[in-house]
Image (cartoon, rainbow, N blue to C red; front, side, top):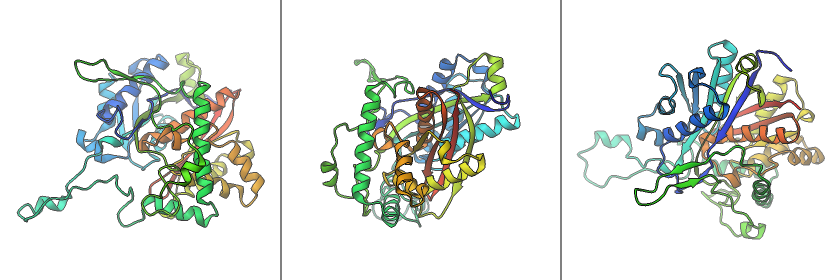
Length: 407
């Protein structure tokens, strides 16, 4: 049964993930966060007063600044949690929500919290165009003011563009453009099959999107990004993006909007509340490596997680690797296979079994906990086991969440 001090998940939920410029384009991240917190409290049937803190991962601070930041604090207050509930905003790029889970785990282990919410949110459709700060001090200059779009090229000044880095590293590891297109087709096909079987709906709760006084609200409850029926032939015709050698709009996820969250506590506290845990969080580990090696980061994170927990690849029945690009699962599984083609294929067979971000979309702050809860979903339907959810983040950071579900 485990120790009373084990950190366990007692509830999880997410919004459907919307496409860039979709029906959720006007929903601020604080509102999305509020909706997830409210849904978690309702699903678990826990008193709001029991929630001690909210750790929220968010990457797009160009959107948060339009709400004066402190998104976690705003979200929990709008959701009706206690004024005394603590909050924390975390930016570790795409790793932000898994790092929020790591913070919740630490707080529970240290006795700083008894019940903690970890979540992630981003609305990439609301990221503001901005005027560079030097114009504040050069207002008397003649000439037009140029707006900057921080979503364009999606890289970090002084370093590379993510799509270029990932594509080059993929080729260096012997992963071709065709293999990446094949993985993209797999992702779309696997997601479509899982959705048809009802394997996705357990994570998602519907939200209402107002459409003005004269029209009824839109009920948004299905991921908007999937492109069922896409073929390898169609993907092969697409041009690459941002001068990447391999990345296209077809083997990359779409920019998007969404929020995801989990409620965590200790096994002892769950017992006292009369709540049956859904999964045990064995550990959450973080890594960082050479800034260019973002496609390698998931493998590095998995290796560290296995070493720290004493587990082996053979102990895992489920692996979720966020598809920031198709290169990430392909490069990382090849590294984990260590030159053994049969082992690499075996690892890939248990990876992203229901598709991934190429189909679902990638609202960056929310994706880490999406793959975490989906790993739990897969383990539960398979009768239990141990799994890992891993995600890379900008400038080659990485997180890995080790999960166990009792059979």
